[in-house]
Length: 346
Length: 109
Image (cartoon, rainbow over all chains, first blue to last red; front, side, top):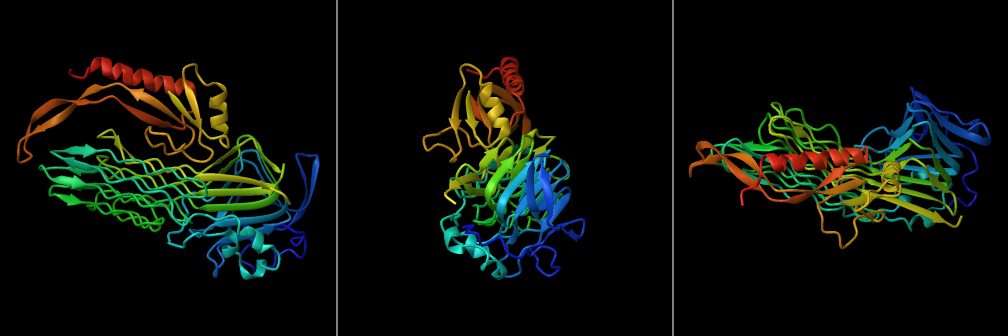
């Protein structure tokens, strides 16, 4: 897919293209860089702080290109600037992470039933002349993510039940959302809403916590990444999703997103992290109940044969359920997403 | 004890290298194995531990939900998935905690 076609004029620094990697309000410019003091990388984008890529207005994905890309230092991170269909990087040479750097789409998944999705569907028009898009069709993210956790029931007086964990993703799939806690008073039969199914661009949304003195079923999270379930009463925490559910102290974020990286070489040092993690649940105002975590996203890294080396961590963890300190119970965790590594002939 | 391992996680590789005797590992690089029947994990690595039955204090209710007092309820033995434990010592600490809880609050026969 690289096909020698990426080596032309760089889009970076044009001031027009939304795919610029922005750090501190400035579009990073390519520079010659000596990786680890020994490996020269020409026309390299070097990320040393918090950097973001804005989504393309047409395809809805944050897409960047680079000849080489290095993230260096514990303060270095690169992500999409907001919830979107995915962060997609096309790097002609090497991607290297050093010193605890972080490349991620944590908590910024995009809700939507987009069906099975291949990376060529996310390419901005300006990139289609630079990438062999036909070859990208082989990498298909499943439109149906893993199932969300079923809601839980409680019936009694000041009785709470912990939420459940969403289902784990299979290959090229996102994880399901967790279910929030249920709390009953006055003998009411109370059921929390179901966690949501994952979508192609975001892990499953989480249901909120549900408390009632009358029999009721709480709000379920939406499918395909959101929205999160509302807390059943104003003081109950809403679940994460796109957008999060309403409620006091609601979870701030969506499911883990979609991260696709195509490079001839990928090389992460120990302590570095590539992630598509879900949002954690939160406790309610009085810490009796807590909302659930959202599902993990989907990470895809494709390199040429022998071009992949990971001494760090690549993960798509589900968000952990919020912990209610009074009841010592949790909302359900989100299900883990998937990490998919391909080494292919260049 | 079952260790749900993911080879792309540095923590998972570290824990696998020190896998205690008696524990078994499952490779989850392609997701959970189809024949896995334990509790759902939310992240990799996770460690599946056995939690012995214990008695918990819960409210006793009348037919209308009125509180009659507290009573003991047996929480049956089950398994839990410990999410991304930092060390095997942390796993041992949790196993010791649930064992002590079961000893102090034994489940009624």
